Image 1: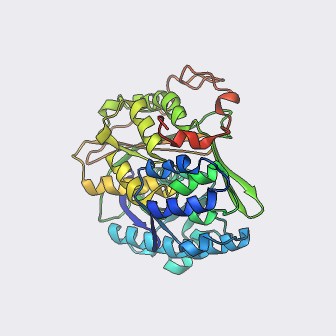
Image 2: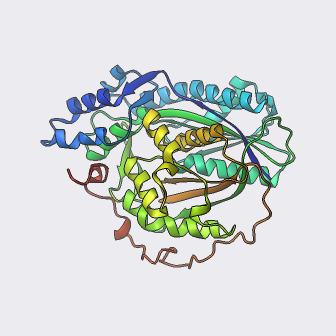
Image 3: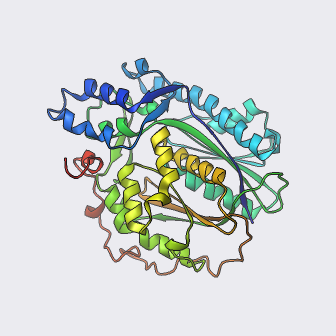
Length: 398
């Protein structure tokens, strides 16, 4: 059975605390919004203390072309990615040449050859290493990339598969975008990278970690406009729906229950929830949807507080913390992340014990057509982007 051997993370050098970010946003957005002080409360209620970026504050005070942003992305991605990979492989007791398959995930910049090709050269990897770059998965990318690594290791049990999820969200900031979506993004997003080594059951590795039991993806029909990028002349413009927390409350539980049912499990039997912390209200929606205790998402909240939302890499930072805590043998963990599509990625893991083969690989209780296992009809209007995405990030009493 494939297992997660090691996680290595890295963040860039420039740290910004939330108060400084709020002051920066006030200066930028105050002429666009007459109620700027009310709107700036999203910074106070984001449950974030500090974040890291690949460029200093002075960079964000200037305009940049798409080419300038992307050049900065390639440079910073190579440096940050190398750091995360080296830490991961050191924890696994492996050299770069011992990696058999390299999966790279990112959605915040472009490079051809892709960043993984740059790192193959910089790290001295085996020139015959297989490469799989994945783009466009957004915040779901870390969990989706981990699922692809699992599937490779399951199909080829002798292989050691390296995943790198890397995002430089700060470089997508556009100073001339005075929309509420950009104000939300300014309060949440940050830069970071996480690498994970997944080994098949016959792979030679000295370290060990939780076994991967199963994985699944769900892309809801007619939900393309919930989250994503709009390509504009000077970069990537963020798209948010204000309804993301309510989508979590309405749509996630039936999918999770159907997934766990494959293994005769229920949400209350999962000991560790490794959720992508998209924001404080998203985590609260997870708690409500799955009837979780507040402590169930403590690692996710800790990562959000210390690093902000680093898109695809963030859930792997949460995984690193849970692995460091060394749960008891037999503990199940559920990795979960939402991203553009609108999609949900799930992965079931277990610490310290082999798992018998599952009874089914087919989702149960999910009828085809316009109803996605929730009893809630899915239509274009149900997933339409909100004209005021910021409202879902403000406390309800404001």
